[in-house]
Amino acid sequence: MTRPIGLLAELSPAERRAVLARMSRHTYAVGDVVCTEGDPADAVHFVVEGRIVARRASADGDVHAYAVMGPGQAFGEIAMIRQERRRTATIEALEPTVTLSLRYADFEQLCAAHPEVNRLLLRLLAARVTRLTDALMQALHEPAEQRVVRVLLSLCGLYGSPAPGEPPITVALNQTVLAELAGVTRPTANRVLRRLESEGVVRLDRARVSIRDPSALAAHIDLPDLTPREIECGEPRGRPRAGSRHARHPGR
Image 1 (cartoon, helix red, strand yellow):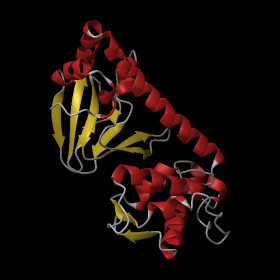
Image 2 (cartoon, rainbow, N blue to C red):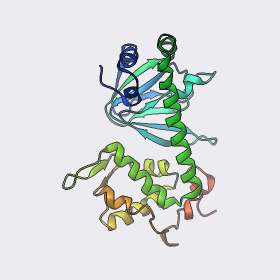
Image 3 (tube, rainbow, N blue to C red):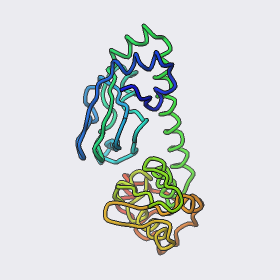
């Protein structure tokens, strides 16, 4: 396979061919676990087709989704630079998925033969830092309902951007996963989604959300705060978040 994959497209043709020649192709069915948090890690994966979800266990043992990735994105790069090479997340295929993996040992050999290949790791890490910084700023400074809208917007880019008149974008994720991605409780995510549905911005179906118009959704990024009645059993202004004790017991 010679098609550029995400950040590989930024390498020179010769460097890209050298990297692709060392890669191995993997296919996964829906629900297949690519790797499990804590397992030994020996390769970075580039998603070629399909989509995966990344989950991680909290300090109290609960497991939460924190990212969905698709073609052009990579996972497994953190273990490449850690002294103890262990998987930092559990990765599961959301749909039929194809990845190309590059073993860490092969990457080191490529860097020795092609020093510019080392830029690939730097770009992977830079992309990870950017995602984490954005997520932290949103968690600290955005209300819960706004984070739900922002997650939907980011998923629009991952699941496609239809032209006017084309069918809506269908995000095949249930509301529990959407709530975890936004860092809110499921009741709060449901209330935001119901409001958007009542305004014709989205359509709710079983285990999926269809975005009718991404532009209209973007206009809701400053969605007014939920009313006290709407946030009953949820959390005002984005706190507490999913996974916290108060999020599981909102009456406390």
